[in-house]
Length: 116
Image 1 (tube, helix red, strand yellow):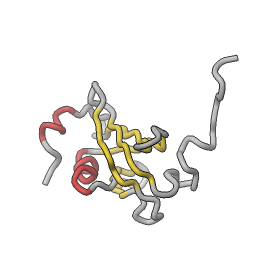
Image 2 (cartoon, rainbow, N blue to C red):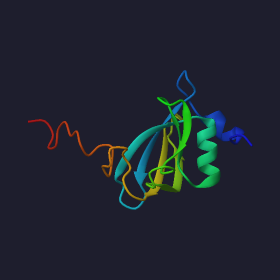
Image 3 (spheres, one colour):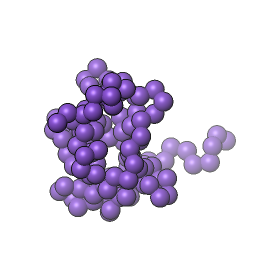
Image 4 (cartoon, one colour):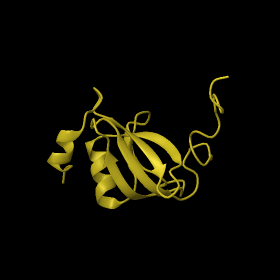
C-alpha cells in the first residue's frame, strides 16, 4: 500500500525524490540526527512505528537499529510548513549515530558560545 496521497501531495522532494528528516528525542527535544526519506520510507515509518530511512550511500531502505539494536520508536511525525522537511520525534534506544555517539552532533562542535 503506498503513502497516503494527501500526505504525498504535500511533500516537496529533492530532484532524487527525497525529503530530509530531522530526528529528535521526543521527551527532551535533543536533536539526534538527520536522515533522508522518500515516500516509501515515510509510509513504512507511519505504518510500523519504527523509523525507516533511505540510505543514499547504500541505495536501500534501512530501519534504524535493525542491525545495531539502537532503535527509534516513533512517537510523532510532523511535516514543516513548506512540506520540505519531516520531523520525527522518537524514543531513541542506545546511540543514534553510527559512530556510537548519542547524537550525530556530539563530536564536531564548531562554536559553543556564539560569536566572540
